[in-house]
Length: 373
Image 1 (cartoon, one colour):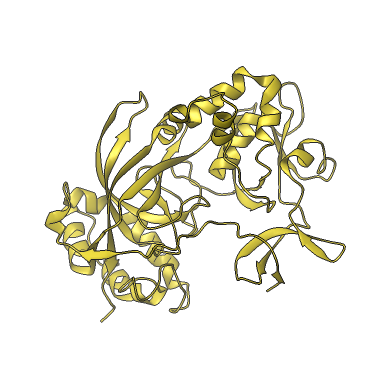
Image 2 (cartoon, rainbow, N blue to C red; image 1 turned 135 degrees about the vertical axis):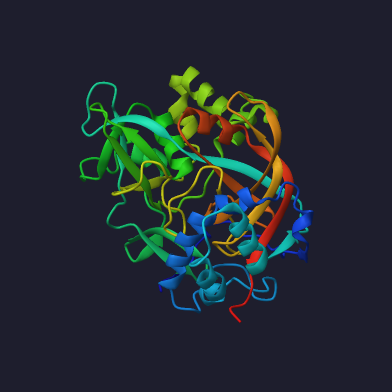
């Protein structure tokens, strides 16, 4: 590990997760259908855990998490799952026998993310003038003296962030053979970077799947905050849709606004993915719309089922109660603290509209596996 000075890439919360055991009867809307909805993905998680050393840490802290923070903690639940039939009643009996519900005492807050679908070209032509870059060869990750991870490069014996967004826009990476594709606009690139993965529809109708491959190490500055400070948007109007609309309506200012966020994300091609599932999450498993969430791994283990009670907007912006079982299969750089989660809504315009409008409070109940014995 390289020990260098710098700032952490991901936020962390000093607040300790507070859990209280509850009965399944306390979960409004709990049913066999909900249990069955995650069984296939849970099986995929178990196959993943079986490849890991038993002491592999999945997240959370041992004093707070009674069980489930190590890969070996799942041996019992995963062993029984292998012989559990795929029907609603069997799935419900299985989860109630092998997982204990714990209510997160902190208030929950939910936002959404999606897999953008944009148009692109394998070559620079016509309207396709914005490059989508692969990870530069000199971009590395290292540990700070405080133990946090940072990204950057070594230059003249010193470690510092890689080129900023403005420097890259000015051509710092041009001609290095890093272009994976060319997009129609800087806004398409920016929202692809915000979400961390996406689908690029080529002129011949083929689709290139791309996923996160690294970041330049500069701090992330929310563009919504910049627009509010400039008086361009009211704070209550800051949504992904409104930000995109503002950028599209002000092409002469869009680049300078986007460059206020020096943070820059690089991508890699994702091969062999099922078109019916999302990009792989932190466990390497394809995300499922409405059934996968991103959490803070500092406070909660990856893989655990989570019962969500909140309100969700539809594609038309109408908000209604939403109570469902999901799986903690991903992490996010702005997801920090107990009760904080990002719901994966899928891909395409409808998924973008739902994710962009989701900012709701609610409750969260985590289902922790019982010990193997």
